[in-house]
Amino acid sequence: MKELRLNAYAKLNLSLDVLGRRHDGYHEVETVLHTVELHDTVVLREAPGGIRVACDHRRVPTDEQNLVFRAAQLLREAAGTDRGVHIEVHKRIPPASGLGGGSSDAAVTLLGLAQMWKLRLDHGQLLELASQVGSDVPFFLVGGAALATGRGERLRYLPTLPTTWVVLACPDAEVSTAWAYANLDLAGITRRPDTGRLVDALRAEDVAAVAQELCNVFEPLVSRRYPQVSELKRRLLEAGALGASMSGTGPAVFGLFSGEAEARRAWEALQGHVDGEVLLTRTFAELER
Image (cartoon, rainbow, N blue to C red):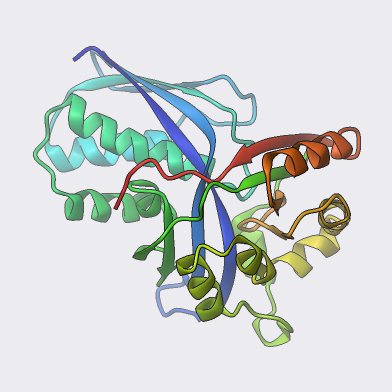
């Protein structure tokens, strides 16, 4: 096998709550995740020597800071192999936006290299490696919808939404996850997600009810630093979104829509109002469970 070409799908945080700080320095989170059709493309090519990463986006590092590099290095060490690989990442998911692009790229790298190098790793072993790369990486090994707890690595898979159209507004700003967690005032959070109600709405395949339960405890903090976040949320709701929220630690904001026509009208209406990108996509689950 000389080459593999893989899609790495973005995610939305339909909810995101931070319950407290853990003894290991991480935070205890509770978040409902869902993949969308927007994706990067990761190309794996067998090559002599070590690990090389190339990316077509100027803001993405290609050394050990890149989660793809770290995933390949970790898998290589775990497998005890000296095989080399050249990895190309073609970005469509805006970096550092809260949409999980780097984590998704890393997950498909683990899956692809395990296949390319014919490694006999079960899903549990891959999950363990993924959790060492990053907190969001385990979710992307399967995708779909899931409730993630712990630091994000404990997953309970959920029914996926029926195909739901989504407009993503991605300001041209980067929010450091470390900054967001360091500056979040846990005692000052005034609204937290009702995770139980959101999960019930997902199980009922009730998109309107899901939209009403969207909630992210980081949104007020990030909006204070980047007022365009709250402005874009307002514009999405005015354009007909059933509900809107920020994903991850931002700054990307998304709106859920009742149909494709409504989403396209909103997508067109937001053009020119974002110093960044406005993207049209839909919820997606690659694997049936």
